[in-house]
Image (cartoon, rainbow, N blue to C red):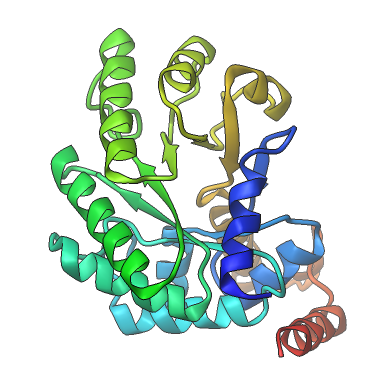
Length: 277
C-alpha cells in the first residue's frame, strides 16, 4: 500500500466508532506478533525500542539505531500503519527534527509521537510547524500526535492541569498537529473537559486506574496506547524466569505462562516479510 494511503488509513482509524487501540511494539517480532493478534495499526514504545537497542529511554537513542529499528518494524508490518515514538525529536532544532521526520516518511512511517517533556510549549509548536512545512514541500504526509506531559510529569494538578493541557493542545493544533496525546491523564471529568475543548483526536496511555475503552470513547477519547507496559511486562517476566532458572536450576519457569511458539514465530516473520515484498 502506498504511504499516502497508509497515512489516510491511519487518520481514518481516529474517526471510527470505537477507540483505536494501539499495542506498542519495540522490534520486528513484537510488531508481527501484535499484527497477528489483530492490531489495526502499530505504535512503537520509545522505552522498549531504546532498551532493545541497548540505550536508556529519554532522547538517548542514536539516529542510526532508531532508523534501523524502525526499518525492521516497517518491513514486517504488512499494510498496517506504523506510528513511531520519536520522543522530543532528539534535538532542540526544529529544522533537524523535520529532517528526521522526512527520513521516517521515506521509511514508510505513517505517524509520529512528538513530546514537549520539560521543554517549552513554544519549542514543540515550532517543531510541529517545521515538520508540516517540510513534509508538504516533499509531497509526503504524516500524522503528528503532539504529546504534552502536563500530567505525566505533574507540572500542575486539578483544574490548573486541565487548563494547561488545553492551552498546550490548542497551541499544538494551531501549529499543525493532527492529534493530542496526554499520558497519565485518567480522571473522567478532566478527560471529557479536555476532549471537548480540543478539536483534535485525544489519545491516552494505559494506566491502571483508566476507565474501560468504551467509557473513554464516550468521554471523547479516540486513541489508547499500551505505552511501555507490554515491554515492561515482557522484560519483567523474562527476568523473573531467568532468576528462577539461575538460582534454582529448574527449567519449569522457562516454560511457564504463555511462551511464544518457536516455529510459529519463525513462520510469522517469514510470511510478514513476504507480504511486504
